[in-house]
Amino acid sequence: MEKINQILKNDGVISFVTDTVWGVGCLPSSQKAVDKIYELKGRDRSKPLILMASSLDYLLPYVENMSISQKKLIDSYFPGAVTFILNKTEITPNYLTSGMNTVGIRIPNNKVFADLCDNIEGHVLATTSANLSGQPSAKTYEQAVQFIGSYVDYVYHNEEDKAKGLESTVVLINSTSPKILRQGAVVFNS
Image (cartoon, rainbow, N blue to C red; front, side, top):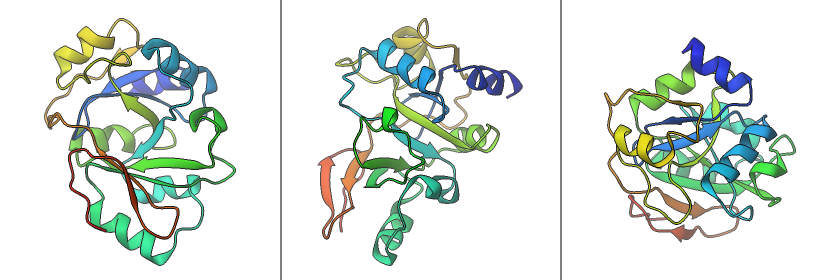
């Protein structure tokens, strides 16, 4: 964990397992590392990164005051394979939200990922899937190494809790009724 913290503090990018697919991530406060993620993936800058953590408490500073109904909805799906898009606060950097006034948040249902987040500075990672844009997402450690291993600073090898292989469902909940932006692992019922 000391090595991972050192890498992240020095604007590094790591790869790790989640409950859905393998991810790449960095500290949200590091624009240099966010830029690296866009470059290594060949990712379109109009596609924002999302924030992931092991607890909603760590993500709350990045989202505007949640309504009771938003909080209830989030609580019913977290931890799990749903990314919720909400209005962001001023501390959420524009460079990771592609200049949008919203931010995606997620708490993966994965013990390895939770342990990783609990032990890094700030407890939050700016993330996306571990793959080159347009290619399949890594579903195993071996695929993460093969797809992006040479581009990231570290691939965290702990598959005690494996990825299931299907991306998260993305749901916009910053307006009156939830809107599914991407159907993924979870069938969403509002």
